[in-house]
Image (cartoon, rainbow, N blue to C red; front, side):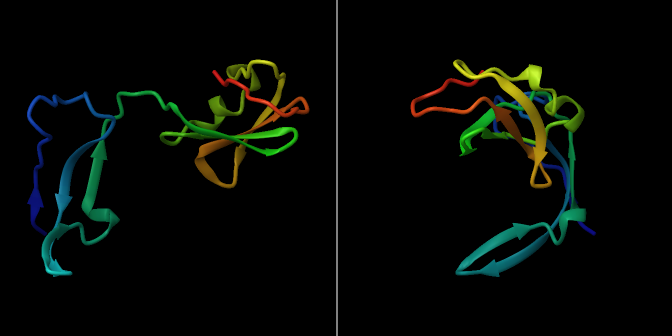
Amino acid sequence: MAAARLRGPAGVSPGSHPRHLVRCGWSLNYRYGRFKIEPRSAGDVEWAGDDFAPEIFYVTDIADTSVLVTFTEAVAETSAVVPGKYTIDGLEVRGAAAYGGRADQVVLTVAAMSAGDYTSM
């Protein structure tokens, strides 16, 4: 297996990006008129490091009393399901649970929402 050590763009130091590619087994392919270097399988890529906490990527209501929060990356379920970690101006957050088997999503149970805009924090 060929291994390549890849470096980020100039000015990017270790720890300045949430995930660092430290090893990649690769193959050279020609598809759609272009050459591509691609991993052969998920086992060919090894990631290390995560220096940044997850951030809220997207929030949407899924019912009158449920709000779906999608994060930028997976969150630890033991921490993510604590209702006291979430605030939404104008609403009481009553519960939090993992959603749909995705580690980057949490569903919040809230007081019944009325029409309008809410701010999550």
